[in-house]
Amino acid sequence: QVELVESGGGLVQAGGSLTLSCTAAVRTFSDYSVGWFRQAPGKEREFVSAIIWSGIRTYYADSVKGRFTISRDIAKNTVYLQMNSLKPEDTALYYCAADLYGRYRDNPSARDFESWGQGTQVTVSS
Image 1 (cartoon, rainbow, N blue to C red):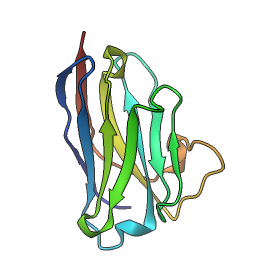
Image 2 (cartoon, rainbow, N blue to C red; image 1 turned 180 degrees about the horizontal axis):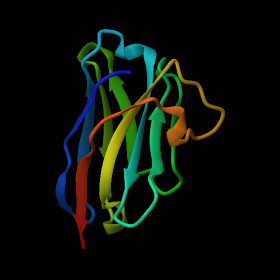
Image 3 (tube, rainbow, N blue to C red; image 1 turned 30 degrees about the vertical axis):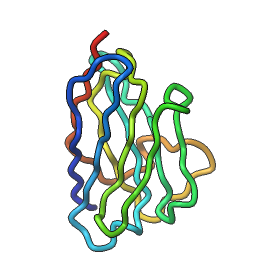
Image 4 (cartoon, rainbow, N blue to C red; image 1 turned 45 degrees about the vertical axis):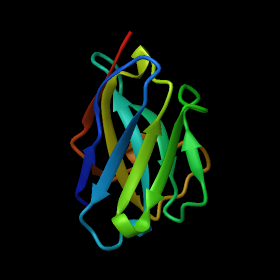
C-alpha cells in the first residue's frame, strides 16, 4: 500500500474551477494507476476519473467528461484533477486511490484500488 494525500478542495461558485492534487510519499508512484472518486452525503462512492500508470490512457465518468481533466507529474509524484465548469452536483468528498500497475478495460471501480487517501472536500455553491 502507498500513503496518499489529497489537497486543493474548497468552496467555489457554480461555473468555477478547482484543481485537486494527489501526492504519494513513494519513489515509484509512476508505477501506480490513480483514480479519483467522490462521495456526497447519503450517496454511494462513485468513480470520477482515472489515469493508467503509464499515463497513456485516461478514464472519465460521463458526468464529468469535457469538464474535468486528469494528469500526472511524475517528477512531483503527483496526480492532478483539473475541474472546470463546476456544478452544485459536483459537491462531494473527493478521494484519490492507487492501484499498482492497474489496467482497466472500462472505467475502474473502487474495488480495483488498494490504497486510499483521506479525501478533500469540494463544495460548489449555486
